[in-house]
Image (tube, rainbow, N blue to C red):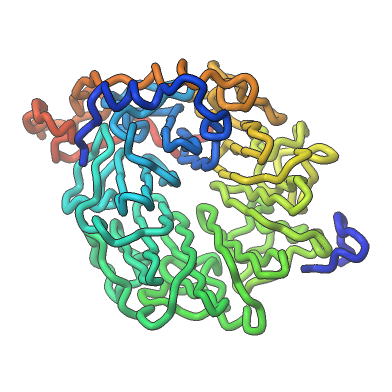
Length: 460
């Protein structure tokens, strides 16, 4: 297939919140503007998280399960600073479907909060958390990056070790069993392989090593493990189809997978019912296949959403494909499915794209000029625009962008006050089952059988 976007001669290429005095210390008069730019973004099913260069973490969108970290279950339509992480020197943020995590490389700390079923938060229990809490099992482990799926989490250390925790019904933890893990557990099958990056889908995981090899494990029904089969794998399996390629990063959508090689070439595989693989069809792929429409384009970043994919190249251009019902591709088109990459605007940014995140139905991007954009579904305020409107094209988030950001105002949104949210206010109680005591200061949802009032998967 002839490349649609190729360029000549380019080639393919602890839960303890800091005291107010520490918060005040961050409001330094004349603070260098560069410390108040967004350097990291993450999207969950219907919420978003950002981290600034000075370590401030902000969240917004749906908060029913505590995924915003503000001590309540309230929705936020504007970015709001998380008080419990102020002074924590956070360097990166991550989102699962209804939970969040943050890493501080300088303090060797990892925090998690939100929906806690199956142990996905790593705190040796299945309780929800409404404020960030340090993961004891990762303390001092020098975690360099994380990945969050629907119900499982993986962590990579600076020594190249991979640890996993959470739900494991399909072997997505890579531990050789289907037993859940409530605390970070070493993926011993990959010892001796220096892991550099990992990505989590709904129930599968893809990791790459320093030597450029890629491994996958977990749920494989749609070929999302890339091994040519449709079976689950409880142990890491090398993706041999990528032999000869040096894989440098990975990404996962809900049930599709993406790997990027050192030449800037994307390879996708797995579920393609909505065109999220970018091959011009709706056919699933059980083996990695290059996205030929991007031949000659050097991709630098990629992110997978529930049913869509977005990638950035080395010139500031953005490409998107897959499901577009809520405008999550940012093309402005009302076409609901794009099976091939679509260029978002002639050139998205005059700088470089430094952060890119896809939620289930929304997308966020930050560039090297300090601009932050959002588009797609906004019904829960997850775009951070101050409303509940869907946006079919990128919208500049002025409150997070250089030149219009008010750093003092953002910091002032952090509040040490919090209120416990009874589970009965968020979930339907199963008849005949009384909820447990809801007065715990730990603000974790009592353990009783919960039935969601509405499905997070419902396309409203």
